[in-house]
Image (cartoon, rainbow, N blue to C red; front, side, top):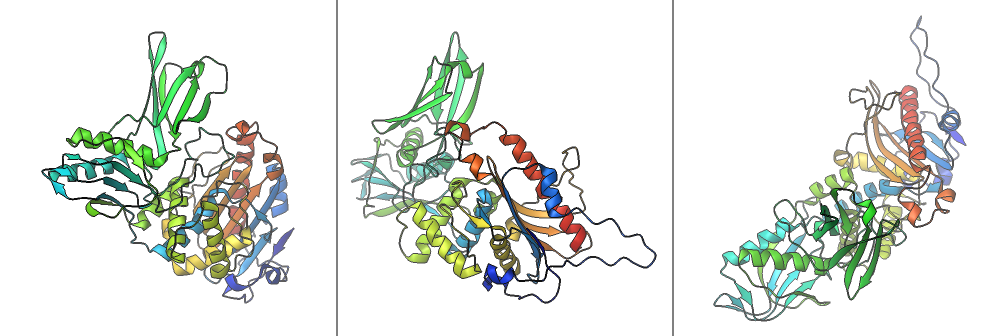
Length: 495
């Protein structure tokens, strides 16, 4: 059902108004008044007509308001809670900024449990993670270089790795296929977004396969993940954990002449430790194999790596929609808010839900993670719009959002389109979301949220089908068409 709301005075603090109260708003819509003698343009299609034209299955929830005042202008099933997919990252970004601050930096430390004598650490050396979602092998190389620069050449004790600053989760969403790199493990110690680089090259009648902790300047091999080719028609990848290591197989017939891709890491602390061991040895410092430890040993700080400021990390997260970044900054925010690390990723999402209900009045929010990857998460369009309107007033999220490019009838990008949209997208198979801000040509800025989902059909998919289900791409194209059509409708009506 579509509701049209007039421009009469609306409660400025819309975030605090229950959705049930908003449903009683007037049922007419403001229209631009044509100048005398002019021919008014035909009214844009209604929302119901646009949904019918799209041919979408499933449900639609959308809402639009004046960005400055928060006056609700139009809503269609606005209180219906649907899966937001990666649109949820906008809430996570606000959560992280409020509790950690835009200048927050994640610190990765190297600690010695004993003194350094004649270049040797008399005790254990500890690589201690600080929850940095952006730590890469280049940063580990810089840490190793700093130690060697201090004259350290070896360790008499163990090489320990610690990821206990945040909970360790084997995967963000356990129902996703194992080989998807956007669904890795999370921990207090992470490396290369917890992905390992898989490369293959044809060698005679077979293939050379390798796995490494690749970054711009380093290519160390690792042992915590292994891969072999198998003669089978499918599936393309198989995974199992064998003696604490990731064991992959790949169908030989799927490899072609050569190529590369990323695979997720399930033992992040060991992965980071093996990469650090390799770059340290290359720099001239002998290290034994890494050993994970649950409790951080006391010791002396030898070297530290600081991440970029949180504002930069969040800008990249919103642009590239990196799931692991959302989970780590979300859990770090929960830790800062509560004074202790959350028990799990899900518990951290619950803490963020409670914060959002209190902060914005988001009565329908029920996220199961911080990234939106889990399809059991729920937000209504009106709740999302209310939060974005409050964040617009605070100038928190809008500067971090990328411009959303509108397209012509042939699907070609139109960078010079007169309507400017800054928004966060969200996509799962048979789930599509878009929420953000619209600047119509010559009109006041609008804030909006659109969620489209066919969750009943998604629930019928097997685990293997979740990656590329039949009809998924066509459904997504129709959802994108509807989102743009709604934006164009609102720009025509409310500019």
